[in-house]
Length: 289
Image 1 (tube, one colour):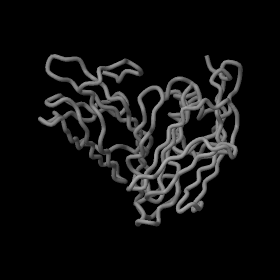
Image 2: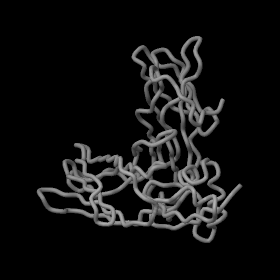
Image 3: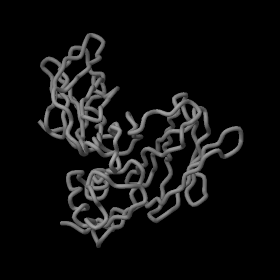
Image 4: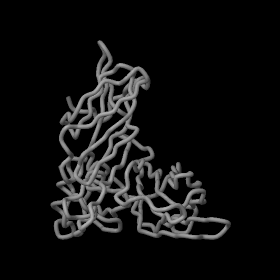
């Protein structure tokens, strides 16, 4: 059974991910919540990779028999109580497992690199959550400012998340105009949803980390707010954002993540590996029927 793309589900007892840990070799531990006693099935794309029953508190843990192969994967979860229909998770988890002997960017590496694991909304707009970083965590006070995920909905409302020093004030600007601010949590993570329509166009996004009234770290990168209607009339240019993958770009611009091959074929001279793209790259999204 394939996960639905946008089928509404009752909120009560809906399964969810709490923890997804993946080793450099692809061995995986997955934990979450569901209705007590429900049968929980985890999928890699449309393929089930394991089944387990939630305990009396609604908690479940699954260790799949086979490791995840290198590349980009999409994990989803459903649960089924006695006599009921399957209920699907609100979110999916995108996992990028590096090839052996390479880091997450595809460069040769003698040290094993942990996969990237990001929880994203199944449909519509919402905040994404980085569950596992490719690098080991830094010591307290030595965390670099980073934007882990940046996404927007059809109206241009933005959702960002990242990491910084604990207790910092994070301020986000678009062409030097402040869009919003948020504090970083005790573990250094921060999230910001900006409910303000952004007109289509190419901008410079800036993220400042402020402590004791002074800017202690700054990031700047190009941000393209694309107009989906442009796809109907010709080629659309998109700028890769932090946290993007070809799957996410295809889902946003072409309607289906599985159509990432359309973007890959149109940009073969810019993409060395379809699983590895970088913030700031500019890709063409060709008109398709």
